[in-house]
Figure 1 (cartoon, rainbow, N blue to C red):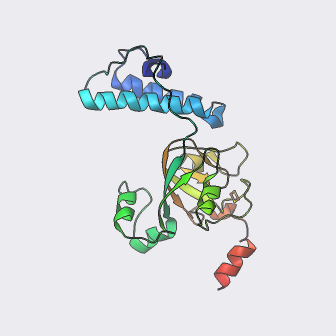
Figure 2 (spheres, rainbow, N blue to C red):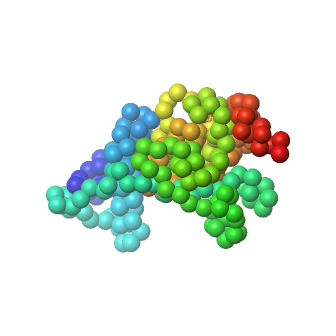
Figure 3 (cartoon, rainbow, N blue to C red):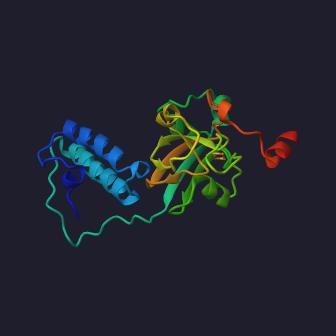
Length: 218
Ligand code: FES
């Protein structure tokens, strides 16, 4: 297994700031949406987390040997765990999406399982498919990246999405993703789902599906 310094392409005496800069640059280069692979992406994240943990522990550059050939590489086919929160709940409680304590507050609020909780996502499975497999009716319309009905806000973790989708770059930078074609590439994620009525997303919506219409007519 390569040393984390080698994975991030920094010298073994790099300081914390150099490691941070190297991580930001490498994680963009190897992101699956930029032509990288899930394995490369996860290796870069793991290397960064190992180095960061070393700094937090010692307050100085962590030391790693050149790698133990017998050490097992992390299992790239493991499930991801998603913690989800319904956007409608935020209005009920007066919470904001940029609140750093949002998920801690949600965990303490004794919410219904449909509004807050966790589920596993199989390797290669989209977030929407996984939600449905666990019995949740998350919103959608086209299921193909052509609308914003299935939009979620990514609060923590990372997802891969094919290049062909309607979201402008500015929304991607705000953390908006499409659950119908977003596939987790980190072990843990936090998402706010049902964000289709957030500002600027309304223009990208398709008319409701027959299921939604029947549901809202009740
Ligand atoms: Fe239309 Fe996901 S349902 S983009």
